[in-house]
Image (cartoon, rainbow, N blue to C red; front, top):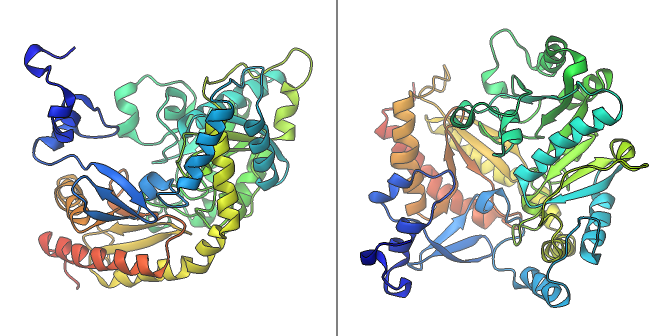
Length: 463
């Protein structure tokens, strides 16, 4: 409860004051707003959003890799309002409702192979948590109760709940919450720009087999991998990587979970990232772009084979969420998928990916740009002190570069993107899937001068 002097009617205080006092933002250094305004976004339209002062920003991150169809789509929101008038809520706990059934069938028709069963959640972490629990119970129902471990990759982000966090390979995110759910094991990621000493591209997949052998095959339940790894900056797989991982999972009776919370729904130019790289997972986790973030919804999509032990007799997946498959959210998802198909949004990504990537590749002429990588509308630039040696920045330099300059300056000049150092320093760009050459030119018009200034500030020069 507010103290007497704080008990001022909210409408007499500014949003900045109220936000500083009451809103606890996610993954945010709250102390940063002692010296800076909180960025308060009040509306959006297409590829752009506007703050409380009326300033316009190009949303080069699709908010958080999720507003795939763009901002301001009243028609998508209207689908939720229409559903609310019909049925605002009913649970999927032993009951069903039309939009959840229709969306499950729609997803199954789009998903690769025999991934025909859909378990709804409220978001990405819940989807990963559900998939990890599912993999454990799946093996138990088949008489292999000791299979509980999960193999993931270093620096990979899979969510914030304690189970998903055990798969997450970022020390700084794990450490504050130790001890985690047991069973998380990690192998090298597919950052081919910085391969671990003594490991070739062709051997990266085999590190998974080696880890399974080390842990004991009878203890490993699943391997969880993103088609393109987000944390660290859009690591793409080498040729043949996922085909070899599929063989390994089959050999050791381990489920392959494709974590597509970001990489599905057109982000990589296909409905699912697994299609982009030609592999068949046992399970897909998804969220974000399923509704283009107009409502919170996630899903676990699993094969008929994985579902089979749960479907007979008294067996059940003893897990669920109150709002998983919410009728309003599933109605919004159906409208979103309708619009994506009607407006050929994925074709737009395929048609413009080369132009987007070409613009980013042109920035290699700046001495601070070390690598450009990614797929579809999911790209990253790694920043370096020395292009020839790939020397990176010290922790202090990275802190100054990303937080004291780049993040603030890019935003000040009208571009929202991610400046991140969960691995080496990167800038990530993931615009709405409706973006095209006009937006790419605008991104370059901000990135090029800001990166040039960043290089000068840190005395990074061409040899």
